[in-house]
Length: 345
Image (cartoon, rainbow, N blue to C red; front, side):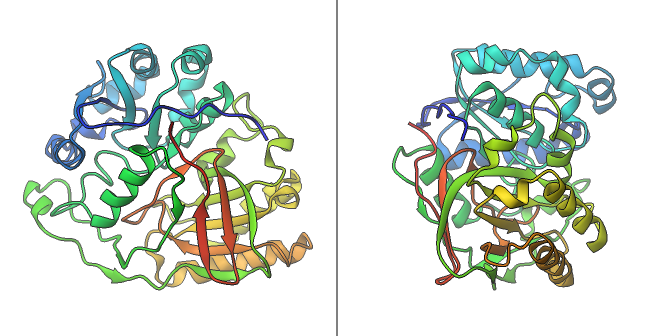
């Protein structure tokens, strides 16, 4: 396993940089960005500042990935900035890699957090030797309609503001993936429809296993594999793979093809377990993904591999946080998941 440096814990009053790694959505729905920013500041006592180019128009940021790369370097170099949080995801964050100085990340370790397309930034951090955090973004997560989930506030405090082991990750009591149009600022006051949480679901496994956390948004993970920011094959030895899918909701056969890709590379054969985030539009979709997971377990002879699905991370809310490289435990007998280490020091 690659040894990663843990960032320093946050405290009220710290400065956090809001960054556009991917799509410039904050320029399209500025009220949603400001709403998420305010909730982040109010709930945790943080000061949020934008990186120099974070609020530029979407097309300008798309056409000039150097602006986004410059912002990431600015945030890591700035001694006043204690954490960097993605504003939103997108689809082309990997374009930043040739423009990034990994030594800047290595020499200035601090919290970096985001999910979905920022998976590519997580692998840049991983390559540089920094443990980053797979977790909510400012517009999607901190921008939760009608106020943050108490579940979110608790897990963020446990993960980012404490140097104690994170411990047992209980499922949220409810979840949502309802989309209320960001074009209408009034929607930020309307609570999204909540569903009872029936997860996590133990798909298979006969005994508890431990391993270091490694994964991300499945589509972006596959973009990164076999590039200069890809984990080496031996980095997967004994890992717990965490995967979730984007709002694009790939069909079952595509999901299976992706799993076969991991098997062809020898990754499925090396890992100690898999946890899967609940997909957006989860009703019915998770059953199809579970069928694909059982197929790959059978094809690779890993019928003993612990697999838990319907987990609270990814493209539904609320979500717990996953620190790259941290030791975790899947217990399929009791249906529990624990993060056995601290994420920050």
